Length: 101
Image (cartoon, rainbow, N blue to C red; front, side, top):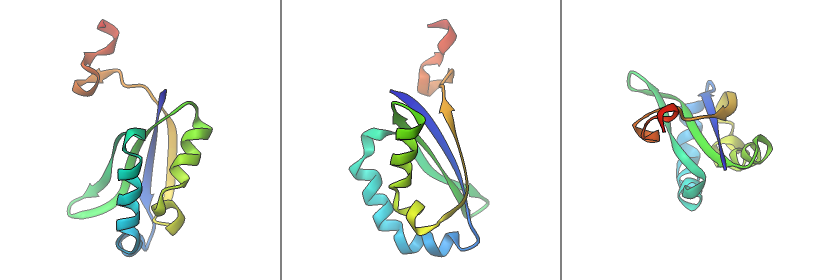
């Protein structure tokens, strides 16, 4: 499977909407834990401003469909979303430098 990174910025009412559907969102994440390489909030100072989700899927269409099943998506938490295939090339998550493997 490939990895697809979704960088999501909250909308104007993101904080309120997050609280409203937080448990549903967490339940969704827990139910599908194997589909996430990593997922979590983006923060500035003490405020959550968005989310980063790296999803395992065969292609972008499958990743996008899975992403859109997240309760935060349905609730309109995120105002701006960018998505692209992600290739882990360096760092401790990929065991160093992938080009040296």
